[in-house]
Amino acid sequence: MSYYKDKTVYITGAASGIGFETARQLIGQGANLVLFDVQALDDSVATLQSLNKHKATISAYDLDVTDAQMTTQQIATAANERSPDILMHFVGITGPWSFDEMSQKQFERVMTINLFGTRNVLAAVRPFLSRGKQVMVTASMASFTGSYGYSSYSASKFAIWGMMQSISYEWQPLGIDITVFAPPPIDTPLTQAEVGVMAEAGVGMKKLAGELKIEDAVKSMLKGVKNREFLVVPGIMANIIRLQLRFFPVSWVNWIGHKTVAFSLKK
Image (tube, rainbow, N blue to C red):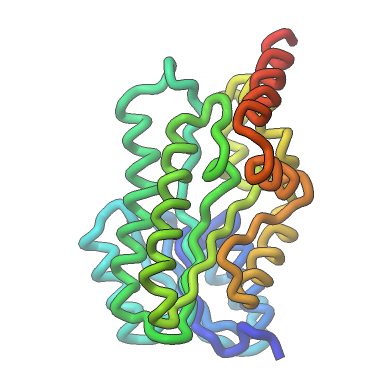
């Protein structure tokens, strides 16, 4: 029997990308799904219902994670119907602009959605978490290393990594397990939106971590949540970089980054 069978999983950002792929895989394992997104969820729900061989429940709620009051209300409404066993938070945006080209408004939008949006969701779901419950938050390889054109995105993801480490010290003694999902680039609508916007130097640095198929990335994440792992980094190249960051001096890591940027700028 699947670990997720009959568990109620809250999924934010469920209308597309990794959130939808997670919902697709979970419905096949018999999980009850509670979906949230600022985008319309009608098509996603219809597709999931067509795959719902276990006759699990599927419900959907409009949610703008930047609105703290709305987030609190919507999650409370959902919890009154069906309390969560697992929260999986995927909402986020990239910020593929160099610092010199980026406006304050652009920087603040990335931080508001990625960091404050994550905080709002966690605060809203906390009253419904008890011993044995789980939380999975999406970070990124950009949580551990900067990249050309990612000053706003990396700032938000570094902050999420620090926030989740701190929260784990507070919640784990209460029996609430935290998983941080830190994937390399994945082909999603989010990364597709960077095409033609991000500079070649940024594209070159992203290639260092490799690119994963969305199906494989989600499978790794679900396995990590099942095993109650704190950190899930899918992909061979991403794990090599993670090991370099742990065991090599920052001067070595920066040297590789600078060489990659210089090579890209020569093209």
